[in-house]
Image 1 (tube, rainbow over the protein chains, first blue to last red):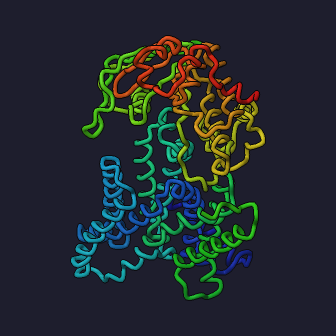
Image 2 (image 1 turned 45 degrees about the vertical axis):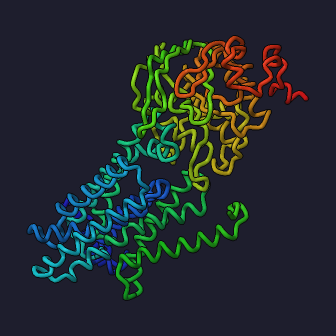
Image 3 (image 1 turned 180 degrees about the vertical axis):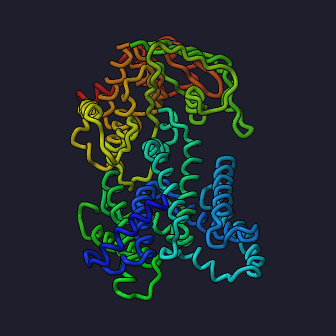
Length: 301
Length: 250
């Protein structure tokens, strides 16, 4: 894959030097940033629709925070502090599976259980950070919290690409079944859907996706990108087709514009923040449209 | 079409230290409408869910399938977030197709959906949001999915709740035709008058079997008269009860 990235970078760099595209594309980190945005945008936009339907926004937030603990554990165990993927994936997958297992066994509501697990994870993270602070400058953790799309390297892009391929390969054939299972589990079961297995699959997908996007968007902000474009698309659509399509468009636009705008207009905003602010502005616009158009009017209570 | 026969042998179900079902034994014949009736909390839905493999029961439930092993299921309510952007056609597509619903339907699937929507009087609602339909319309949409693909066993959990007379009558005719064509219908039904009209067999469940047999026979028994003290048995026997069809005509 590295050779492929090189070819792409050379193409962009030559085009930038010849003046056919913006000069900023002569920098490697800018090209990396845009490539990541093009992968992350459609992926999070599409999966976000399912997160909204399954009401799992709080879960992805919890996984994002668990990633912070994963980083701390990784540093303690001697992994590179810039890319402790083994610890992040291991801890977050364990976190997600354990949470889903407990939910199935106790039948407790998701928000209560996520709150409990989130607190436990943060407590472990806070404890681990005390040890980490002796080893590294803890400001490095800002990158984990809020992302740093412009410092991504080939390894980060490979992790993201593999995760994107796995997510698409698993989620596309199972999309209808997951949808039906969230609409009515009994009906889904009668139609041959393994409802519990699909819950685990979805939890795993959200977990690996969140971890893979931590470097790009940030642990705190991944959830926002899963949620806001889908919520904006939901404001304007009455069918799944429109819902998914617009969510992908909003998410992709937010990612590209969030990377482009701070550099093009010399704004002192980090890329992660700019991406989410763009998505938030889109959400506000769709909300205003929804309020203004009679076709979306529904019972007030 | 050859519907399955179903045998319940000493079925028991214990949930959270509560004995929901105990020693339930009865049979359901193919090509019949078999109504399950009983008081609230008597275990009717649990019995059906045990039959569908959703409850960890004891005893044996044997389903003798023919060539077609498809079950059509209509739950009592389709409980979901009514604000979700899911149209009627989305719902039917997601239930019956592997290709992601947002990529549309195959031509064959679209034609099948169109025909069934027409049959159930929902042609003009195909693009409406499922959550914005009335309770009766939504129930008809759920019926449509139960017939895709064509089932040999139809399991209905109080499907007529909230339906108007015309809608109820239409679904009644569809169910009757299904049984006439050889399909097996297992129907949880609270309306004893309707059960008397449509059922070939009825089973009264209240933790265990209280009544089992043809409605004409069992509803005349002393047990039935204790279970349904307000029912006019002379009317039921003479077939002069106020049926849905009569109500519609009047």
